[in-house]
Length: 202
Image 1 (tube, one colour):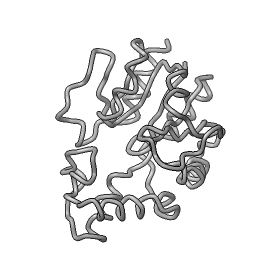
Image 2 (image 1 turned 180 degrees about the horizontal axis):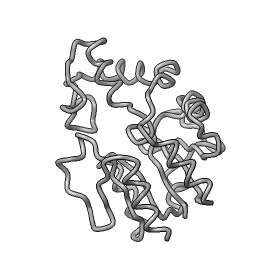
Image 3 (image 1 turned 90 degrees about the vertical axis):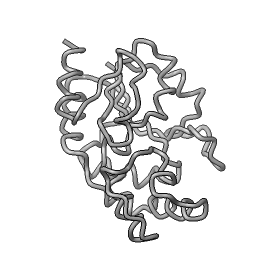
Image 4 (image 1 turned 60 degrees about the vertical axis):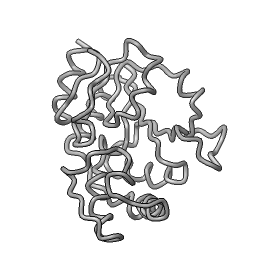
């Protein structure tokens, strides 16, 4: 099977780090379990200038490398690879974060997975024709059987794959949204994701 895995809050605990960062930078105390929106400026009540500073700090290489792994992620992904599945990490992180993101994967035993930065939001200066960047038209030519995703905003990027099975990693900001269809399954962690994918491949 071809498997899509989102990076932030599926592989690593990005939002928990951002919760701490909001306190450190702006005194905005919003505990992880109270993060209700994928849009972090809305969740942390940041103005435009603060949000730019916040995202810039959150994507510094040393900060990216400090994120804790989501429990079980590397173990399950390496199991999939050993079974012959093709796993790609598709992230909306800016292309400037590619090298530390790749380094983080390597440090966590995920040297054999592909990593792509998908230009979801038309960022300025996006690198074209590289081995690791994808424009939307490139992405829409890719086919996947399974996806692991936490963001309701990303669900629209699956509309071209009607048979795709989506494992929705349970997070506070997706609990109040309705899932788009029967092919979406809420999962409390990587063990449940592993079990669901095993049933699909059996």
